[in-house]
Length: 366
Length: 267
Image 1 (cartoon, one colour):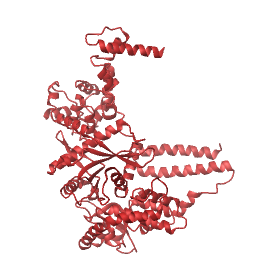
Image 2 (cartoon, each protein chain N blue to C red):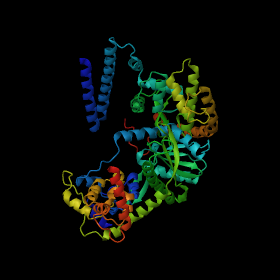
Image 3 (cartoon, rainbow over the protein chains, first blue to last red):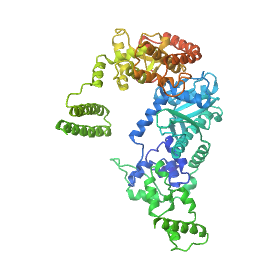
Image 4 (cartoon, one colour):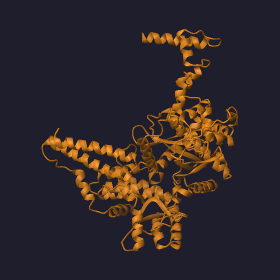
């Protein structure tokens, strides 16, 4: 692993939170991200240093709104959540137990969560339904990350369910697919951590359900509504991605000797390396930019600029990129569409489609 | 537009900018003060604009009157009033809601955050000097439960909480609020709203829809669910209360034993 330490330089490694881990699963093909994450490089600081700070982090209003909604769902011993689970999963009336893990104080939360989950798994009859403010840990690439699911619910058919409370609204039974996907990825991280904990405690990890309870405001009111989200696919992607992180050797082999993303600060806390050098180092590792990166990765602006610079089709999104398979750049695609460039062998089909699209566009514009 | 209005608008704009700066600098106490100033300025603007429209001073200064009424009673008395009505350990948020619905109103949750600590300090320096103390509810580890306020004159069995207690206390609270509503000749609309919101989460308490809940129905439904939980909860509470009675000192019995290695109670 010393090669990874070289990459990071003499600064402490950054721990990952659930969002960061979930973002890993969002773009599994990106070598740059895999490498930076495996080495624990502070991507935000790196992006800022090379002059492409990400417009990142939620707005204060969104955070406040999220917190208010979460406290509404959880108030009075999770009264709202209890109603939702009774309606959604037929939770028996007698099951109402509530344990606030945070009662023991912040520093003991992880061990208390462990003890409570262990007790619940062993004597499933009398244990509580809700575990509020739990703290789980997950080992990733040699570091321990601490994760805080909103609530862990038990007693739904003897299985644990992760409850994720989000403040985007479900309107007429529909929510924005991207937000649901992001929530599912995040919840998958919690499921994975909870399963790891169960395994460690010697219980069957399958007792943690792959169905996650997603709680959102309904329509335009503040009334919460719950739905089940199956996160099996996200779990699979996540597992694969985490396994890759421990097998980054293959990526490392292709790297030039002496490459580093070190952000070693001088006395004033300013990185000692020049921005140009760092950018050069970053460019040595191929990225796989897609517009979704803007929502998930600190390096997004840097990669987008790079993709624009070389006219890559990645800018247009995954779907378009896949349809333009075999066409290397935007110049080439435009050339094929306007007929100024002869299609090479194997490009006839896509060239015909591009010309058709070009003709349709002309007709519309004219 | 007249001059005082212009001046006020300018003042409001300045205050907004200052609030933004304070928030950015993470100076919460300054921001709170500035926000209060801002609210006052905005209220003054509201009044001024009405006066200008009608050409006479605004008569119905409803919120202002209410606020002055609220200030007559100390915060601990107001909290105690709400706790007396509810009779179970209650979260600060619900105390504020009950105070708003039935009593003077004007309490805010942040005002309650230091209450327990102040009461503890007072008790330590001069035990049992006051007729009652606002104290903590105790968890099954005999540590103070997060965010719950209780009355020191209640028996220990009421002041400890087990895993079932949050639900039992929620149902009891709903019953108490509903019963109090039936006693009032003119139920305040805010209280009816509060009860309706709680009733949504009690099975059988509302006959569909979001309309105002009927207090009698709520009492019936809540009692029905209480019957299921009460025996187990009473047993758990009695066990914890017996332990608390045996093991804790007077102060700890009211304010909870400090959790292991927690660095508090230094006063």
